[in-house]
Image (cartoon, rainbow, N blue to C red; front, side):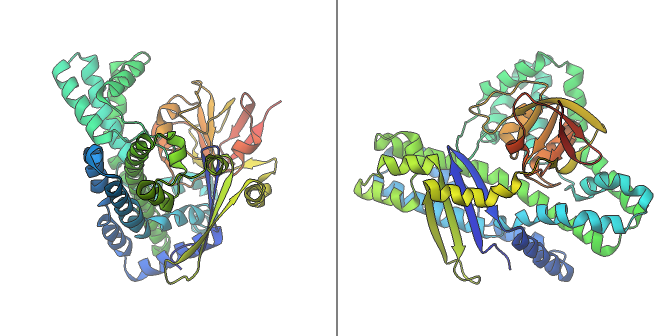
Length: 459
């Protein structure tokens, strides 16, 4: 098995849930592990194969330049090539399978490691897991941050010539980093300058230089830490292979996110152009299905507003593979009460009172703080110094994470975005609780036990 046989996707008020079978995801991991035992370059070859499918980015760029002179038919043909051919093909080139890493790392890896270390060292289990699973290269967000910090230092040193030039380069290379699947925002040089000025209100030149040095030396420090742990514990070749696979899958997740955020920019460009041509609200166009784009662009057939409202309010999309050996699949859309029944069938099991997750970073043993639940960074404001609670973090969460006292997420494993960022920022983080956003409320005072991965409400 290489892919899940069924996927359930739930949309409610622009918020998105995705569920696939954890058992099937583990089967995917076992498949990868078996292939890697025979050929350690298996994942590298898969990644190389995936790289060849990135042509959708160039199609998006071409559309953005030519959109004003294209006919409706030409827009449809270009969108079809972008979304239904190239982008979908890229997603099928292994990208969807990397989610298997979290299931293995959360449910199976800790016990495998515990078996190979003395009981007295098991208190270091989380540190071992986090360090050895980390990919020894910088993420795209860390690369952006390094460029940002260099410019911030130039700003504080009043080097105007270097400041202006590098701000434009930064915006050109990373304009897409605050995108989500609902909203996109093209960062400009002045946006980055505003962020620098805001950070400079509470940070000194030394603070920026210290963070820049930390990022630039991160990989050498990580490699050294890995070497020390491997030498200290003498792990078996099989366990080392597990960690190597997690490194590769973690890097692939970052690679996927980088290019999906860029794709989201161009998808939004298509939607804006179509909305303008047919005098439709942008949100309505975003809830069109691909074949409905074709009907709109070629035959001026609009989807009734009540259907689009129902999709936005509460809808569930169930995609079932008809044949595990082909891409043929059946997709069914459910609305209203039917969609809510599916949602409740999945999430009713997460009504327990205990909040327990995996420790992603533990700079302290225990801490307390006030809860702030953020699901949409475009609609909600975060108050600095509170504990950020969310389903999962994305690059658009980074400015909030830098102001947070700690982070708690429903989803994610030791290679996820929240885990990586919390370690870089040096703040406490518990991931994969499943229920934090459903049990906790804004303003509640909670305690994080960073030895056990427990979150407790305080009276």
